[in-house]
Amino acid sequence: MAGRKRKLAAAAGERDVNTREKQTCEEEEKRSESSAGSDLQLRLGEQFFQQPCISLAKAFLGKVLVRRFADGAELRGTVVETEAYLGGEDQASHSAGGKRTKRNTAMFMKPGTIYVYPIYGIHLCMNVSSEGEGAAVLLRSIEPLQGQSYMRQLRAARRKEGARQLKDKELCNGPSKLCQALDILRCFDRRDLASDPEVWLEGDPNTSPAETYDIVSAPRVGIESHGEWAKKPWRFYLRGHPCVSVLNKEAERQPQSGNAINDLGSSDVQPDREQSNVKRT
Image 1 (cartoon, rainbow, N blue to C red):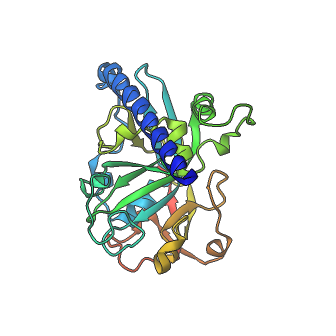
Image 2 (image 1 turned 180 degrees about the vertical axis):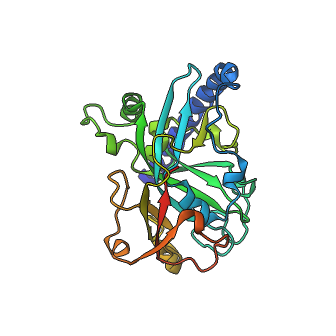
Image 3 (image 1 turned 120 degrees about the horizontal axis):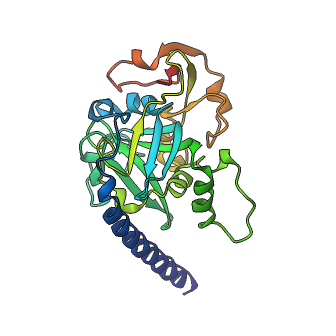
């Protein structure tokens, strides 16, 4: 009986969260209409997202995720950690076996489509579709670059009263933390990252194209129940970066491949544990 009450309470809480988010989304969309034509020349367009899932997951690293609000305020952060979910035979993917549901529709839409889904009934995760049937990249962590004080307020609103103040590196070092800190709402689901006026991806204009970082390839996190698929090294992060959510020392001991991200092949077949270098453009 107590278990049923807890489930009912959780369901009621999720409905309340969804209602508040729907109202917030509607208000934000109305206010943002005037900013839709703002300066977005730096954003990465459709061509960037037209890559196989693993290639896209690596290409995200070093790019800047931007969240713009109706009043023109912007939050920015460099992507430092991603995970690839290939769909099809990837049993850890929401689209495993080609399964299509109302929830995962975005995974089957054109590359660059945002897929937002809830976990534990209250937290959200942000993914982006890639080439490949039902394939998408989970954005796990970013390094805050702009708007840290506002990110901190957004995170504090979801934490216990009196909790200690978060350090900058703790603001977005996890998929649900990222969504909280950037105010990524459920209504962002199925929107186009290549053209949306409120969220998009840019290259980093403040970093030299010659600057490189090692990419660590490690098993994905939180999917231990999926057997051999939990061991696939399809989580990618920048070696030594303080904003990575979970370090994997074993993967970091693997030798570097020496390949640059722009030299990667177009196929996601037989990915391995090799580390490569990523150019922050």
